[in-house]
Length: 125
Image 1 (cartoon, one colour):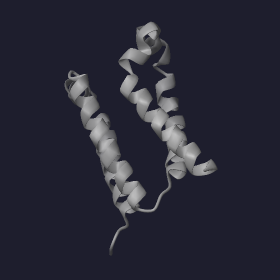
Image 2: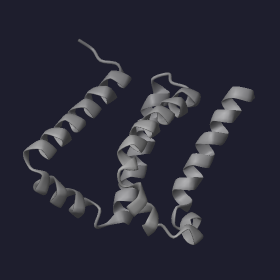
Image 3: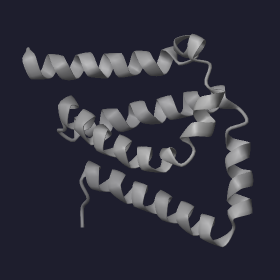
């Protein structure tokens, strides 16, 4: 059986999420310690996630998806993440310095602006 690129990415996602959920069910403290250790170096984790996001985008585009489809799926994923985020939003929002949010999130914001311009370009040009 030969899997497509999108199917391979799906299998990877299913495995990672299944392992995470199982880990959470079996040892919440162990998972918590792992998560804290990972996020102790936010600059490094940002670079790792940026590289992984670039690789995944490359494979999705190579599999024939258009940027508009990827953005639409991102909307769906954002709504799912929003459900989980909602429980913690009040405490997290208190920690955000909105005066400097673009200074600290410039890379993230730039990526979204590029993706959005690319999507609009694909639709209208």
